[in-house]
Structure formats: C-alpha cells, structure tokens
Amino acid sequence: MDNYSLKKKPHYPVSEKLREYLNYYSREIKFGVEYKDLTRYNNAVPLYNLKGKDTLWESVLFPQSEMEHLNKTLIDIYSILKTGGDTSVTEHLSVDRIDYCTFGNSNPFRIRILNIFNENFDYFYVKQADASRIYGLQLEHILSPNRITYFVDGNTLIEEHIAGIPGDMFIENNLHDKGINELRLAKEFVKFNERCFVRLLGDMRSYNYIIDITPDFEQVHYRIRAIDFDQQSYEGRKNLYFPQYFKENKAFVDLCIKYMTPESVLQYKLEEYTLIVKRIKAAGNMFNDLLKCMCMDTISTKEKIANLAEELANHYQDKSFLNCTTMGELVNASLQAVVNKVKN
Image (cartoon, rainbow, N blue to C red):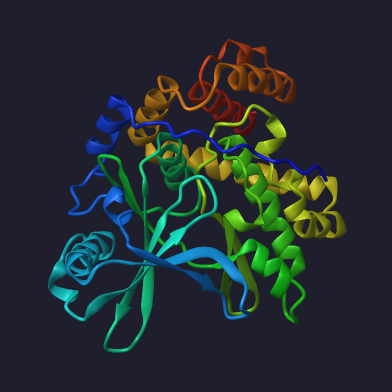
C-alpha cells in the first residue's frame, strides 16, 4: 500500500457563478456570525478524548459579553439547520462548547449545542467557504445515498454534523467485535471506493469518513460516509481518489481480499454505477447546473489537471479526457463514462 503525503491545499474562493448557484438552490442564507468572528477567542485549552489522548482540537473561550451574542446567534444557526429557522423550539438550547481544530486544511470550529432539559447534545461546524469543499458537499448530496445540509453566507460555511464512528476509531476499536459482518463491510467499502473515484473525491483516509451502522431484523447494515470534502477534485494523481490506496484503509482492503472474488467486486461496482446514474437523472437541473458551474471554475492547478487527464484517459481508455482543461470537465467526463457503462 502506498503512503501519500498530501500537501496543504490552497483556499479557492467562491466564484460569482457558484454564488448564483447557491442562491438559486437556497444554499445561501444570511447568518449573524462569520467564521472570522470565532477567531477572536481569548483563550484555548487542549481537548482530550475519554482515553486521555490529544484530539488535536482545542476548546476556545470568549469574553462573557461576546459569548452572550454568540450563544443566541449560533443557536439561531442551529435552528436553520434543523427546523428551517423556527426558533420557537430553541429556548431550552444552549451553546455548551466551541472547539477549534488545529489539524487539516479547513481549521473548522465545532459548535456543541446542549439541550438543558435532558443534557442531550448535537454539533455543527463553522468553516471558511472554500469552492472545492462546496462542490464536494453538493456532489455528495446529489450522487451519494446521503443528503447533506449546509449553508453559505459570504465567506462562511455552515455544515451539519454527520453522525457515525470515525473510520480510524472503528478499525482500532470495533472491527473485530463479535457480531461484525465483515462481508457486508467489504461490500460497502467497494461501493464507497467507486463513489469517491468516479466523482473525484480525494484523501479518503480512515479519519475522513465515518461508519454508520443500522441494525436490521436479521442483519446489520453498514454505510461508509465521507465527512471531509476539502480534497474534491484537486490532486493530479488518479490513485489519490481511490480510498483503497491509502495505508490507513488497509484493514478494509484486507476484508475485500478475504471475501471478494473479481466477479463479485465487478457486480458491486455496477450496482453502484447504476444507482449513481439514477441519482443524476433524479437531480435533473440541479446536477447539470452544478457541473456547468464547476467546469468554468478554478479549483486546481493546470499541471495537476493535465496529469490527471492523462491518467484518467488511460484508466477509461478514452482519449476525450485529454481535451479537458478544468477539474469540473474531468468530473463530468468521469461521470459520463459511468453513464455509458450502465447504458452498455
């Protein structure tokens, strides 16, 4: 298994065309707080997990006067995510904690919302609005079996929390538990691997996705869901879009080797391709408008685009990839290749 060390991706601003798309499809909403407002904290303490390990997050503190304003505004944002902005059911909610991530590209803030009646809590994230991340979120919303709730205001991005067991924690703590259905996990990893590749979502190492477990009346179902979209269509190497090539995912690859034949792998790939094509048709103009916008946008370098175009042309045995000049065009060509596979 190759070990890739990805360089930090630059920030790509939201273009005018992308802004129009977000407005048209009701993804742009005015908030009362911006990402930069949360950077004005005056103290921070490291956040450790239950085993005493540093999580690379910090709990940040604000002056009391500023915290009063943040408490109301952040709860209003939470109501937009959960109830369409109806604040009549938020009187019992409070901002319990604000965490800041010191690791990765986006440096997000994680807001913990507490129900003071029953001490239940939920999260959402405040990030810098980066074009590649927004494309990644919207492609996930359209092409995957998962719906994504997010909103943008200027240079601020609000994302819902995606619940599940982080992949690295699942591999370490749960993979060998009694009752784990390894075959179903292997099947889901094959499908996840293909979903990431055909829409060019990169850097899906084990800490960038979660495992969602759903008990059924006879079996347990697993779904692997991406939670980090920073590397949507940025890297110039084909293998960086395949989760199977990251050493952090070796445990899942080993399950696939143990349980899968080439014929069953092909079957699950075709199943996923068919579902993706159905989702494209169902999305209609929402998908077409997104790809038009993405094809005109700059979210990578010319060198990476040219190299990836060559590798994809070899992978698909299709020279039309060599005519692509943007990452959006490569995504479009890759998805069209999937549509053609299903047709044939």
